[in-house]
Length: 312
Image (cartoon, rainbow, N blue to C red; front, side):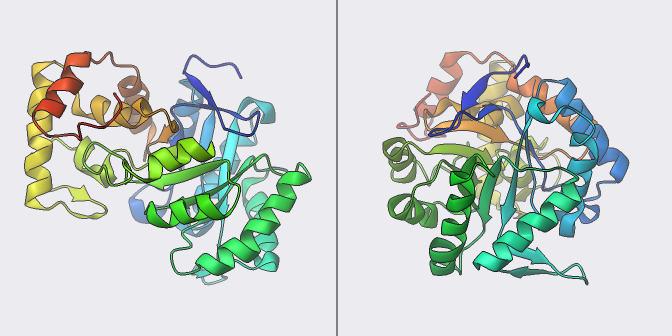
């Protein structure tokens, strides 16, 4: 894999991914992303060295997969790693229904490959099974595990916005990686004490989604911003401002600290912010390469702005 960005290997596999990936959630109209924006972000990511792309049927009712496929099908298939997801089928009216049965998982993969205009997906995540744990574990997982044993896919994972159920999956079955959104960031360390050590113990790689907590950590904090896709609470804005003040003293952008924070943990193999256009993607690449004085991390700990147990 030719790239200037750092690379990780997904545990239990020979799959190499860049430690900075591209999240595909914003590649949809309702997020204000046009086709030109999406293709520009994908091209900028690849030209900047990103070799890991994540998408899902649910993102834009298929539009994210279509945009990813339009770009990725135009370059060498062995030059990038792609992950998509199962668990939601896109209906003719563009609504998504939860489906974790063997039949629906296979149908979902087939439909994804059509939208992607590709013949394979490298990493397959079970997507948001919050209310469908048993079905995901007893039907979706064995189906995907069989596909891995056949060499159809290369890695198995689960992608969620919570760590508690991911921990249950880690204890019950053999997974290679988890996509955890928003629960190990500068502002949310809830996965630190139980989930992250468990992943190290079980040799499961963690991919960080939503490293900016849906906006607040990428904001200038001069206008209203979001936290977990809702208006950011006052206490979160206050804490973020305190972190930003320390970053400014060290002449380091808040975004760089937010983006690099997750990668400091030995369980984490990649972080995948979701850009809406090429400018956002270019900034992510730049932020991933900013040199950060180790004293900055120590000061954040000293000021109780990050947990003292965060490995930095």
